[in-house]
Length: 70
Image 1 (cartoon, helix red, strand yellow):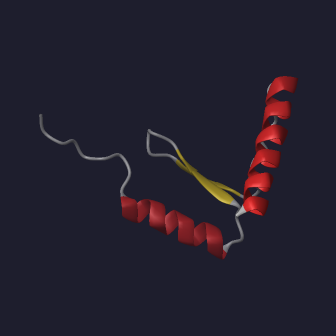
Image 2: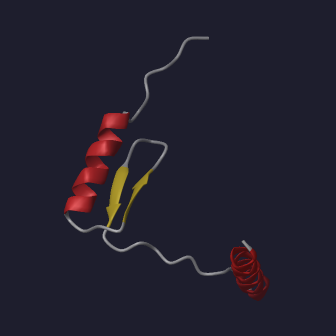
Image 3: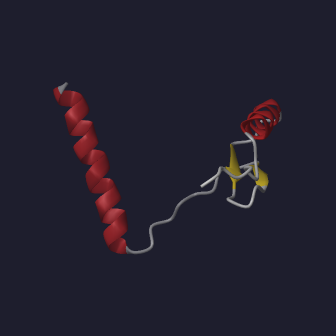
């Protein structure tokens, strides 16, 4: 099986990251079809339900306890 040509090259991603940093963007998003989107403000990830919110808080507390121990 031969390798196929990528839809996006590493140099393209590097160029997008440099431009985003230079202009104060928070993040970039690269999709599998090769589209590069520069996000001026990083999206916030909202929990889908109350359990996910509780789980996130629980994991953060657990990580804090681990840091205190070390």
